[in-house]
Amino acid sequence: MLTALYYALMILVGYFWYRYGQKLLRQGVRDENDEFTKPPIGPIGFVVVAIITCYLAFAALRAVVTREIPCVGKGCAGQIYTLAEHSGQYWGNLFFVAWMVLALAYAMYVTVRIWTRP
Image (cartoon, rainbow, N blue to C red; front, side, top):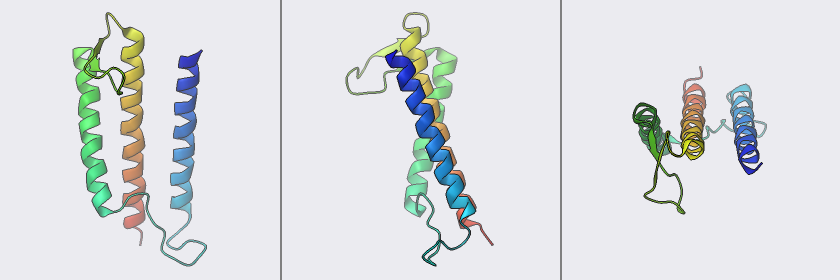
């Protein structure tokens, strides 16, 4: 039950993240206060988010190929989950990493779309 709640909350947060990005893209060049629309991340943040996204994408691809993923969290630092022994934890951590890659990539997409408006 707790796992289903975890996945449902992750999907709900992803939905609201998507709606926020769409709201920013629909706003146009200026918002309701006649100021330029601010993207979710700035130029320095964009570079940092790009580096983090690339690292997480590499970690997700590596986890799929090697069928093992290190634990994501403080409580289990240093523990490695394998698909054969801990399949539930493996898929849970892989889902979280993939969700983070998608969320950060979407933030970069929205930022680039706002920066390149005519």
